[in-house]
Image (tube, rainbow, N blue to C red; front, side, top):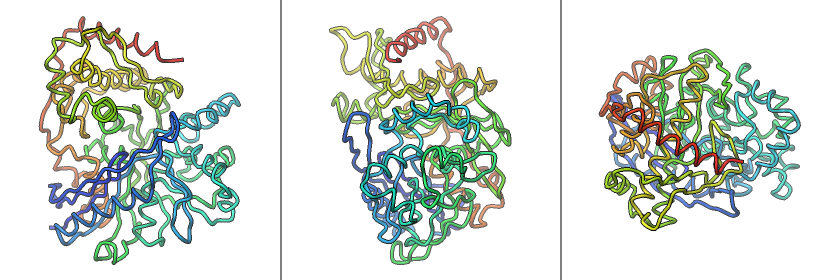
Length: 487
């Protein structure tokens, strides 16, 4: 039975997982890396540290299982790296998707009347979240890089592209359609880089990677790296890989991933559905040259808020403690956290909003902080689903994954806030699993995605039980808190 290696390079850690053909985890390794905050609202990663941790965990799982048939890569999206084509060395730290340093540039472009054209071409909004303005910032602020970029001496990539470059020894400079669709430079209709967007964002075409399907030939790994030349055959941004891993292939099926951020994607099939409520039109995946699209709502801070409780406040020692703390209270005691640490995403899209906590009294303690943090994730998801409903999409169930989805208390509260069933699969490693499925498809191990995903099984289903009156009361309190941090 062939083994499939998934490299899952996330925002806070690099992971490698080996699956067998049936989707069973055979080996897993994970290593966290530094988060760098040079200025308020700025978030960076050391790309060399991303590479070293990725290589370390990948070598570990390959050594444990031996033979691997194909490699799939899934990655934190939008995070931007520019590097030297000869040495392979990045010109600076990577600018992370959470980074807000180009908010002023985006506002200037909106003021200049460019929003409608950008959204029509790319499906995205003018927000510092995406890669386009990050690339231009690097080229304009790292000495001499713009001139070198225009001469073709530098390469740009999201993390997938940077890892492919390193794994293949610089032989392949490529990305897939899902990651390309998050740059503000990719035309959804033409399925290629858009010349007008390149001019608007001042990005030279010479730095761009080739755009391939999600199941495609991305070269082979250098033998000395992993002990063999392993074919890289599947690539997708993390949220798109999770959609595949959750087997959401029918229009209207929805998955919501609770990782560092929270991202809800609803498949729209071959329809490029334009949102009237600030949701994003994006790629679901592209296979055999045929694009499948999705509507996406992005929440910038989900699991990162739990990390904040642990690392910055010291309120908890481990993420698992939040469940017991939340359960220890009869209610939220009027305490609301709006975790706008890097602005608010969909459906508000306020880059200047900042986090705040409301309703504290002298009795407020760790339990209230923990519960308010978990509740905020459900409230934000509710806002996304309300926007989707106003755009004509009303999911009857939601499939969840990501580390935070293991919290039973939160999943029940989520079902109560959304008023729909919440399904959690037996394997919550659906992001990595989706990358493995794509690699298996690209390597000819699976005849189609449906065959690959036939192993999907539900581990738990959470049904809404809260009275409407209580749900509306809690949501009113949340909406009041959000209004206080916007604008």
